[in-house]
Structures are given as structure tokens and as C-alpha cells.
Length: 249
Ligand SMILES: [Zn+2]
Image (cartoon, rainbow, N blue to C red; front, side, top):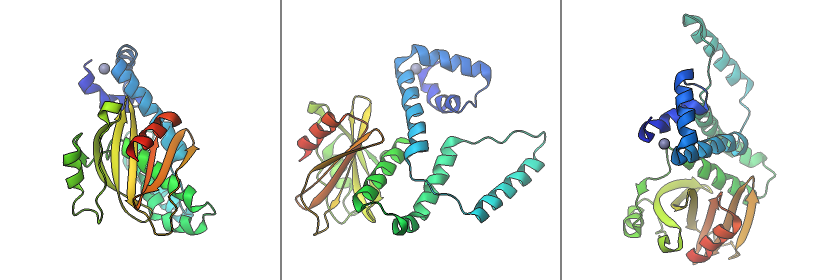
């Protein structure tokens, strides 16, 4: 089995949706190929993080009932009957969509501090970006390509820096929506780990403090400087993320 053909298969294998013969073949490949084995491990981790970390909201009873009714109807029309299968990516995507629709409600109800809410938004955005659909809008390791890409898309200009020589390679950027506004997201890679660095103009009330937090195995550092609020999140260990923040500041 060639590596190039295996990424899509890795996801199906993870969900137990491959025929047994292919499953055996890909399991053998994973055990013998460091690159696919590593990727498989990260997919497993990502799947479990999405299940446990991304904000979830209970669907209202009428929505549950109408979905169940639609599923029963679809199953009745399908011959021969097959058990319904959940594709976890699709489930995660609907959960995320529903989460964003319900965000305002949650915000009003939430007793979390504003900072915790922000950290949850940052983590959700980080995890979503790693789902493989939306890591980068501008994939480039050239800061002179990435910085102008934001022109006209944001009402501020993010400071784009590359730290390849220090082991933090710029891989690109995208626009995200955090703290009720569009923000710049810069993506850096260190070994197999990604760092999302979010930045936006600081509200006038914000202090310039530097702080770190850890939540569910992810590390966050945040600081405000030159009128910009910055948040970096990664599964890198604290000391490395700290090193990244010091370089950037
Ligand atoms: Zn491989």
C-alpha cells in the first residue's frame, strides 16, 4: 500500500468502516510506516479531543424527534436494511454548526469568566482547524506572502513573523471569528505539532499582562502588546509554547 492513498483510508479505518481485508492491510501499513502511523495516532487523538473538548449543546427535544423520524423513514426505504452508521466527522461538523448557532444563548447563560469563554473559543477554533478542512486559507511559509493576503480582509494588519531558524516554521494563515469579530490566525509548525496564533486589536480596557493556562491537555499563552491581543494554543508543552511567545513578542 502506498502512503499517498492511505490518508482517506486512515479515517475510514479509525471509524471501523473498512472491509476486514482492507482494514488488515492498512493496520499492517500503520505499524510499519512511521509517517502514516504518526498521522493515525494524531487522528485518534483529534477524534477523542473533539469528542471531549469542543463545546456541545443538547439538541432541543423537537429537533431530536424530527431527526429520529427522518432516520426511521430513510431506514424503512432502504432495502435490505442496514444498521445506521455515524460518521464521526459529520457528527462533529453538525455539533460545531449547532454549537455556533447556540453560542449567543450559551454566552448569556454562561457563568464562566470572559477569559474562560475566550479560551474555549480559541480551543474550538484550533481543533476545527486540525480536522483537515480548514487549517489554512493562505498556505505559505513566506511572511511577505502571508501578510499582504490579509489586506482588505481585516481592518488591521497582523504582524507576520517567521521563526523557521528557531524551529517554529510559519505554514500560513486564515481568518477566524473569535471574540465576536474577525481575527487573524497564523499557523506555525514545530515537528508534528501545530500552533494557532490568533490576533486582533485589543479593546481599550485590556491590560498588557502575559498569561498562561492549561486546559484539557492543551496549552494557551496570551498577551497584549502594541495594541494587539494575541492568543497562542497548541498541544506543545508549556515551555515550548512559552519560547514561541517570547520570540513573537
Ligand atoms: Zn505510509
